Length: 198
Image 1 (spheres, rainbow, N blue to C red):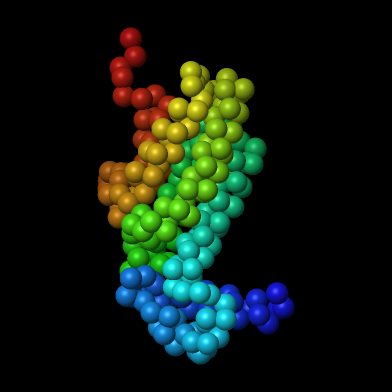
Image 2: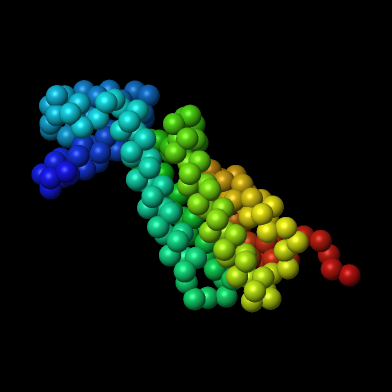
């Protein structure tokens, strides 16, 4: 693809993202995207079949950015327990940023449509693999004792997915705590649990 075609394609994707953010995917038309991009409908259809294809690309772009950030965390040269907490907060903050950037889509941006579920499937597999790497390094460092690595990675992954919406909406954490205190609370819960040690 030539540089000009590539720039036009990116311009159309960005216009679609902005319109989806303002109106939501369901209420957006290809006309809306064409108008927002200041390109004609014919140009838009030269690059994309329909708005579903465009919405898939927008969501895929957001998920790709998140994946790169999480891979960078996994490569950090820090103890596994710090790496896991950094991974968790990087992931939650990245989701919050993506939803904020995508306006009216709010938390539904990553949850409601079948299309989103399909796109997320591949990223979920990659995320679970990253979590397993972090947990494995923690076992080697003698920081973690994990009887079943696969189950633990899956539980952490699905727990994080369940925390996305409450985190985005600011429902997690004690308002009287600062960010460091909240982070420490989460760390204690994950690594110490809630059961009283005898």
